[in-house]
Amino acid sequence: MDTAQYKNRLRHYFDGVGFARWSAIYGEAELSPVRRSIRTGHTLMLNQALTWLEELPAPPAQPKALDAGCGTGLFTLEVARRGYQVTAADIAPQMAHATAAAAANAGLGPQVHCQVADLETLNGSFDLVACFDVLIHYPAQPFVTMLSHLAGLCKATLFFTYAPYSPFLAAFHRLGGYFPQSQRRTTINMIRDQVVQQTLADCGFTLRFTRRIGVGFYHTTLVAATRN
Ligand code: SAH
Image (cartoon, rainbow, N blue to C red):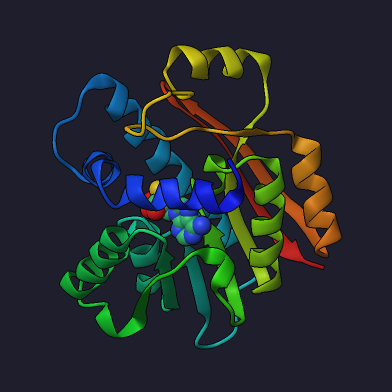
């Protein structure tokens, strides 16, 4: 599959069956134990990113953030509440619309600008760029291209997650059905730590914090990097 095919598949998935599945996981209703573990891990990941945001140097007045692959807008709303003007973009229309609706409901509409867009088509310049649980769906080559594009939009702080490579997790993902034949699920692609470190260095970023988060069926590495 080439990158365009990956993107098309993800757009269809997250605009269809994946929308129902993930808006439930990112919501508050009762869930099966497997999905509950994903919600718990994801919440832990977002809270860690918000804690790091407090620890990093404060942004200038009227800071701007980009939430690339915003999903239902969980992180978008948190940073909007902290005073950022947020551009929230998602390749799946239903996801971008869910974020717009959530922002309006929370009274944050004026601070949140939602777009249906592939993150590689975005431009601008942001104090904070976040891309959570999006790049995990792409193999190493598009991963590097997309991360480099996001780094180019980032003036200061870059947050993202990736699925770390490990033989154990490779087996685990196979067992968990993360490498499916059907269109009903997404694939997780594992990226080696050195690839991430090299890409950040090539883009002029320093890795500031990293944390592996593993809860049940949720396994990810969260990274905070800052421009040199
Ligand atoms: N970042 C959110 C949602 C993660 S789900 C959160 O952590 O809560 C992954 C999201 O990435 C989906 O909504 C999917 O549509 C979006 N996505 C996948 N590829 C994308 C791309 N190339 N550009 C923009 N969004 C993308």
